[in-house]
Length: 272
Length: 293
Image 1 (cartoon, rainbow over the protein chains, first blue to last red):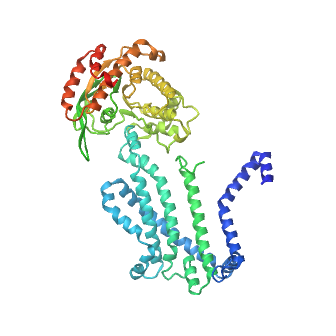
Image 2: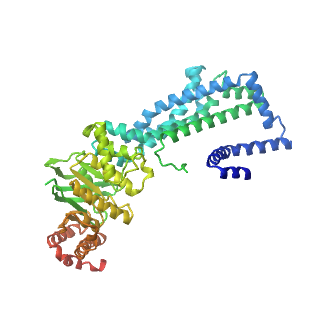
Image 3: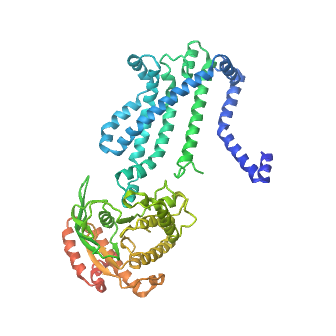
């Protein structure tokens, strides 16, 4: 660290890139600590390795799966499913959220139903989905769309319902007609909420993935975990869990970077 | 008359019953004058301005602009809000040009840019053209809002406590800026404020409203010539006038604290008396509730 400090003082450029590196390190620091504690527990031998494999063992299994069992194929299948579910879910949620946010009557009528549907765990729907839609890709996608749609709808409608009427008044007194108010005032103010909805839907979709892949999926990270649990392959289960977590995390960072870039006009708490 | 407010009443239905905010308000605004609206806090000044703007419909009575009844907001009446209402998703330049991109008063790009540049200069916003509102201070946001309203060249400007959220120094600077622009491009202005000092400094006439439900208690001609300088604020005549009007409002305010709904009718006849008293004799009216002052 002392050396790093010395460099930072010697030149602004070096200092800045070191700052960036430090910021990245801050983000992953907690994972390093968790891995270290985990490895220490494994080394201590208190917990049998059949129950808690060490990080090193999990990594070995990871490279095995990657090389011989097509782990990337599983990853690809899951990413495709999640993205399909989220894209369809959010696209459907945009008009639904606007309708609910803009018209009080619609909101009062539908809100209880919306909260009821949202509270249902998607896994509870799986048997019904299988009965109605069979065990194909459609059934799996529907579970994900369901999860993404309801969470995104709520975020969007709360955003629309919370719009400041003062901007609409300001636009009106500058001569804006109804269509202009919608496209030039309501839409730009809603964009951040749609992007937040995208983030929330992505998180929910990843959380629902295992349930969706309960529907007789051959490939996918959720399917990998389920197959492994049938054969008590704890290490493979750990690999599956960590892959889901990391992919979800990276996607979330991606959406956040996108948000920061395209709605930079917002005053956010995170901005420091 | 540019604006005629005729017998405008406004009642709101709340959970506990009906609240009357405005009661038969009648007043005229002359073309090219700045009319101040002052009164006890919560008396309905803003409601009246919103009705003139067309944001709110009166329960009875009507507002006429150039003889036409107001049915909704329009580009002929620019509005300046206390909370600025500068669009946060647009830059300073885009904010000022916003009205000129709308169908109602569309201007081609080159003309728009020229107008925007002019008001950027006039409002002292040079160097901030590409800034977003979150980077601006309150005073600068209000300059953007003023420029945005002026850009579409409305005949009327309705200002709702526009400088109330600013610090004292910025407020005085903004008042002087407004006077300066008022001299260059005369508009008919209705200026709502709770500051009597501000109203006297800016306005040609001041309409004092009664407590809620508000009526016009008195219309006072301000005897000072335009252009006005900042020195005016400390002139003896200015200070005296200010005290008189403030006494009148304080009197109104103390009535609103003591008086219940029961004697509302009695209070109203009371006010009619006050309304007929000449400006110089305000002491008669305020003497009655001297304990409150």
